[in-house]
Length: 166
Image 1 (tube, rainbow, N blue to C red):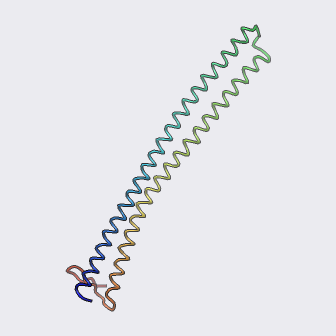
Image 2 (spheres, helix red, strand yellow):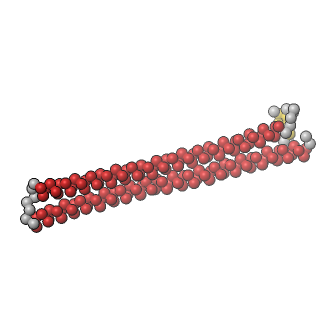
Image 3 (tube, one colour):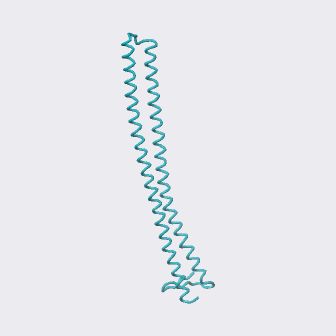
């Protein structure tokens, strides 16, 4: 193999180094996108929690208002707050409490899903970085093997100014 051919082989190997660097940069960008998505999921989880707390506050206020309205209407009608009328007020309060508990549960479940999504996105970001390094290593190793095959029967490979011994 002549000098021109060995120079081309070395240049091809150098190009693979550039390609490997590009693979790492591409993986880094994908990882950064996943990190942004993870941050958005964490923010969404916090917004869900705030919305849930506000919904519970609203429901508690509505429950108090309903109870006051029921008591006032019964009193205005001259109904004594015992027996069935009292049971109506207690049932309404129990229904309101169940609604509040359901809102709290749904808020917790939805926020948990958003938090889990954030954690998954974090794992994907780490994996993207590892994948980029693995791909870069594969590119360099494949190129080095192809370069070595350019010199069949030889135990040395010429490079820029040096000879590598295989």
